[in-house]
Image (cartoon, rainbow, N blue to C red; front, side, top):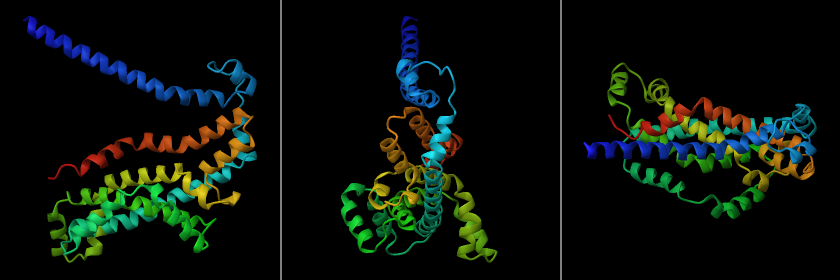
Length: 282
């Protein structure tokens, strides 16, 4: 009996320790976000005098200043257009490539899979110089299409890997039945494979959207025109131009974080389900 009681106590103590750790980590991540949100509704003096208290007067005009006067509205739309374009191109290209790699058996199939897998192992920073050289030589600076293509190139390997693993788990009998009914490969791809691959497509789309939205390195290198800057680069300029106005600056940060945070919260289950779906074969 004593042994059983000690085991039960050890389990409870382990659970309590785990919950305490998770609560502390949650507070560590949530507190900076709450501080930014509260500070975005204050003026400078109030931020420094009472940084952890609620504002005496909610200054919503900070968001108006950030959105209109600091051109965050233009940067926001640029980022939205770049991110959505990146996701659309990646879904089309990666799903087609994954369908071929997952469902067709040909001589170089394994070599192509390894080739795409190697793309995930190349650090982005090691090829910045040749990429910058090519962009300069081709005259593609201040070109949003070129920026989208760069994002697509760096995200393609991950997208193909996830979609290929998922598509390999789809039951072949569905395709065989479709072929018997006279369906072609393109019809099978559009009417069977794509609808069944929605969880994996959602996963790679969310990751790619967040990656394009938060990326600051490539816009910093290739975008100089203020009208074409994405929100990450616009926030950096905002900090330089209005660094002493902390209220509007915090409001600009909230605007920048708002979209990816909402998207992840809405599609969190699909992200987790899509990553785990290809792990087990039926």
